[in-house]
Structures are given as C-alpha cells and as structure tokens.
Length: 192
Length: 392
Figure 1 (tube, rainbow over the protein chains, first blue to last red):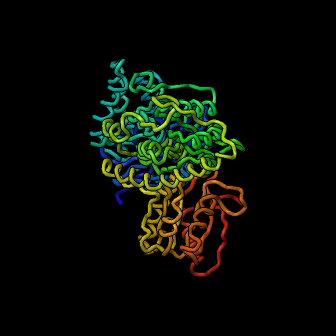
Figure 2 (figure 1 turned 90 degrees about the horizontal axis):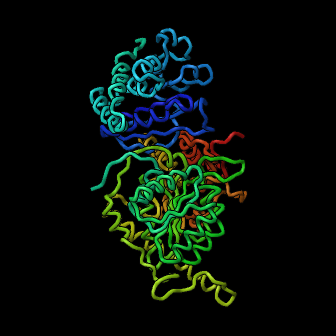
Figure 3 (figure 1 turned 90 degrees about the vertical axis):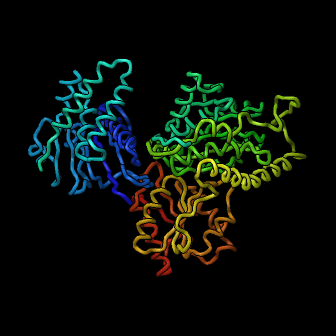
C-alpha cells in the first residue's frame, strides 16, 4: 500500500473547516489520488467545536472510521486549544498547523505536542486580501504546503480554476483569493 | 466510458437517480437522507429529469404516493432513514404484497429512542420481514451500483417486488470518496427507458390492486409472494453479471474477502466491512489466516451459499449493528448460524453487537474480534454473545 496521509481538522461551526477538508479532498482527487473527506457530525451550531477528516492515498482506501492517530492536525480557531485536546494521538513525526498571530515557539507552549508546529495568520491574510474573515482559503494553502499531498504548482493551477468556476458571477474576487493563497504559501512558518 | 468522480454517498445516489430518470419520486426529508430528495428536486426544477416530484407531508404519505404511482405502472423511487422508514412501515408491507416494484434508498440511521441521528442498522433490519428485497452497500460506489441494479431486479417479470438499497448514514452518506459513474446513456440502456409493468391500474387491461383478501385467497397470494422472493435470487445474479460487463465491478449475494484458507472469519454488513478489510490485510501480512464475508443481499437471504462459504473456517464472528433485543443475538447472527446448521457444523460461532447509534467502529475493535476468535480456537473457551466497543 502507498503512503496514506491522515489529517484531522478542528474548527468551529461556521468557519468552514468542513468545507476546507472537502476542498483539500477535491484538490488531491484532481491529481489522481484516492481521497476521503468527512466531518464528524454533532449538534451543529455556529461556534460549536467541529471536527473534520481527510484520508489521502495513492491506493484505494477502505477504512471507514474516524482518525485517532493523524499525521497532521489543522486548527482553524486557536481558542479551541483551551477546550479541545487538538493534538491527541497526533504522530510525533507529524505536525500541527494552527491559525494564530503568535509565533510557532509561542503557541507550542500552549500545545501538548513535541513535534513540528506551523503557524499561519489566516485572519490577517484574509482581512487584508479579501476584506473579511474567511480563514478557509489561507488555511487550505498552508495545509497543502506543509503536507505536500499535492505539489504547490499543481495546487495553484487547480485552485485558480476552481475559484474561476465558483466566482463565475464575480470574477473580480478571483485575484484577491489567489493573493490570499499565495500569501499563505509564503507566510506559513514552522519551528523546525 | 466511466467517469471518475469524488462524491458523497447521498450525491452518488441522487446522481444515480438522475441517470435512471424515474417517472415519479415522492419523498419527505429526514437526516441523514435529506440531501437525496434535496439534490433530486433540483434536477427536477432544472428540467434535467422528466420526473414528477411529489412533496408530501410524511413518510407514510411518501410511500403511499409511491405505491399508487408504481401500481399505475410507473417507475418510482424515494429515499428515507430511521424514523422515516418506521413511519412507512404499514405501506412497506402493502407495497411488497401488491407486487409493486420501486426503489427506496435508505441511509441507515438508528431508531429512537433516545433520539439519535447517527448510523446503525436498526431501521432496515426491522423491515427485514416486510417482503422487500434488501441490498446493502459498503461505500458510495456500491450504493450507486446497487441503486442501478435494484431497478432491474425489482422490475423483472419473475420478481415484481420493491427493493431497498441501504448504505450507512453519515459514514457513507456524507463522506466524499472516489467512485466511478457510468455514462448517462449506459444507465438508460441498462434500466430500459420505461418500466414494463405486466399488470397495473392503468393500461389496456387495467386491474384492481390491493383489494380485500379473505381466508380463501390470502394464503395463496402470500405463497406467490414468497416464490417471487425465491426467484429474486437468480435474477440478482443475472443482473449482476450484466452489470459487471458494463461496469467491470463484480457483485453477488455477498463478497468473500481472503476466505480461501481462512480459519477465522467475520460476517458483517455495510461500511464496517471496509474497515475490516484493512484489518484482514494487516493480519494476513502477519501470517494470520483471516477472512471476511460482507453481506450484500440480506433479502432474499442466501442461506445455502453462506453456509458453503463458511464450510472450512474454524471460527466465525457474526456482527450485527443493532440489538434485536432477542436476548440471543442479532438477526444476522441468528440467520447465519441457522443457515450453517447441518451444512457447516462443529464451528465456533459467536455474535457481536457493535456500533449502535453511531459509536465509531475502529480497526482496533475489529482486531479484537479476530483475536477473540483465535483465542477461542486455541482454548475452546469463548462467549457466544458479545458487545463490542461499549462501556460496561
């Protein structure tokens, strides 16, 4: 069996963690991979903690359980680290990618995790490029960069095409979203 | 040419319905099935199908409207889950006994109470004796493939029975995964443009359907209904063979996974079979002789075939994702064990109730079942009735 990458997303209802996990699945699917993208459904409401998952592999995936020992954890809302054990089961040779304005060294002190920590200020990027807080797009770009589930070059072409499709009625927002993607690719930083 | 797509189970089913293009869909929404009528009603609104979509006020009405349309000779489909299926109960029996073929997509969800929106099989397993054919699906791909085959199976002249296509709520219905869809024209050719109804309320020789049936005839009608269910066995295999030519995917009554020399086997239904295959692969890599039987067709029940498939194992664990509250194991356990009697005797046969109300079923859970089976083979000591993954 080829390399299986397992990713767990933590966000709050309404922030689009589920959508981001589905977008990541789509990006990987478009490069010929086998994918799974699924949320863990609970009493859904705005602001409540939610979890979503991705499996990405070169081979068919038959396992149908939640992910308990992920290779990567993505935290879309840093306030969750106080109430949710976001790094539970995360592999030591994996990484956590967190949306925060803090540095990787600073935020690491708040996480119970010895592996790599990457930070991305998705709020700042989103507000400066899109004019509003949509953490999805920068988080997705940061996850692609760190996990390397697809190459950055392929991702850039693919995501531009999907923005053009999604925003067919307002093409002026496509460059702004692409700017958010490119800034996220540059600004995500780790404590390596 | 098949199309490689990434879809959720509900999307796959809704797109399959679009390709089938039925005459009538009457539906009432319920989690986690809601997306199916939701997507399908968009296809209707966009003019992408010719279907008459009947929004109704309850599932009892949904099934009643479907039966009326099917009795008139139409090709009919609907979707539901859990309490929705429970509310259809009375009409399920009417549909099967009126011999009205129609296809019902069920996203398996626990029945109340306490109320729970997540997956187990208490809904469709409760309907196992309603006279419907039941096909179960491990993945979105299988839900899609079963849906298309269900049309042909139910409408076959020797069968004329309604068919349930079951797939796991959320686990399959809401997870996006890879699958292959057939071309629209291939589906259209496979199912045929129109249903050929040998008898109906409408047509050149209109017939009454579902009238009062007193002791003088009722039993004979039930006997014919039972015969139709027996006939379905051959038809299911014929349709599967034809579908394999079209799709390259092989279907039968059940799938045997690494059973050739298996000493310890699990019999299981739906998505957990995928997780169990992953465990079988890992244990096989360690040299352990393990296998898996995944039930696709629960009604009609392939008793002889299952018993034959289990002839050479030493121990088998039969897993039910519901508690039948019989105090002696779930329905799959009881039917498989009964099928083995006199054909595959002298085996260790154990029951596992698991995953109720969406309790996640992990590879660790499945490893425990195989480990229990090997321990039973080695020591001869074991519990027949087990609960897996519950706090006690």
